Image 1 (cartoon, helix red, strand yellow):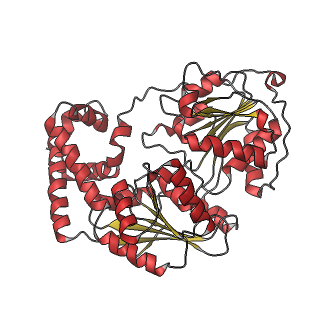
Image 2 (cartoon, helix red, strand yellow):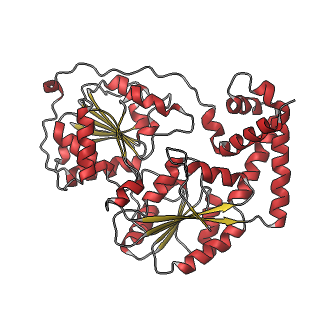
Image 3 (cartoon, helix red, strand yellow):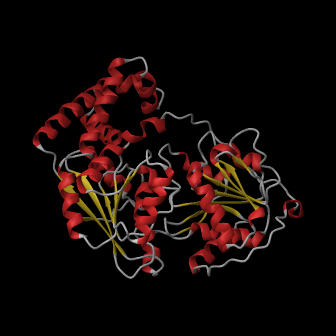
Length: 442
């Protein structure tokens, strides 16, 4: 008989990690440390001219100095909006070697290309793009992770490897990139290196150690980012929602209590549960119950009323509204007549909406996870997180959308449903390094 305390702790763990069930079942093939090859820098000289058109901030100079002191290998962790791309441009200007920049999305291919030409002054003929049907290997090449991982991608003869959103690199598919590249200089940039599958420690062997790190609060205190407040607003389930949530969670917890022992024998409860759900209807139904319960918590009816109140309160502000699921994005968009961006939004329409938000034609915008990373979102001063996952990365990304330097204080609201797994999810994503939480409850 399992002790009640053990079961309670397990349920909290499962609730926190429910959205990562599929991530946890990924192949966890260990990544061997990738040693940089001895390369004659004359063989990988870039032969391009550079002139940085921006004045680096002091912390960017400190980050570059720390990276160079680590022999040009390592990861720099800076929040969204702190200018990680500028740091990479500084590294390119300093070394002037053949450079490979790896990015996670098609959109970032072109953002990087345009930024390099505009702010580093590199001629267009020296900057190539690989991905989105293009195959332009140049002295400075921007390539997607997917393209760089292809066996036929010619990654050798590179002096500097830059991995944007470097937390993607430890995945089994992408970890081969630095080994095949062999660049003696390696720079990883990310807002948060942590991964839901726990493999972020592999970054040390792939790119080097974390050589510099600053939090949003530290940069705000120094005046490099806007001062900000984070406010958590709790809502309650309506009676019918609470009944349905309770039934579904009881079904889920009963399944876990009865099957934990034999499913956990291999040490990978989540992965084994995913595998079993393929041919075990009881396991599949338990997972479905957990997902449906989570949807009730994230999409609680009371959140719509809170959104309405916050929009009225911030009528004159630029507001970004984030939701975990497209269905709620669509619902908020229709209810309040707001422009919306999801994964279904066509590229041209997305560009038009973002430009309209940038120039002030729109002052409110609702979006799904598609805007979490890889998209240059115009600045706002208020963010409303209607629902989100448990990762600190997503929280920092969304906070970063409102803390770019400005005179006014930035605000981030989180809407959390009481007495549900969403409380643990919110708590987990807001934990700092030392385990404390920084929040203001309402």
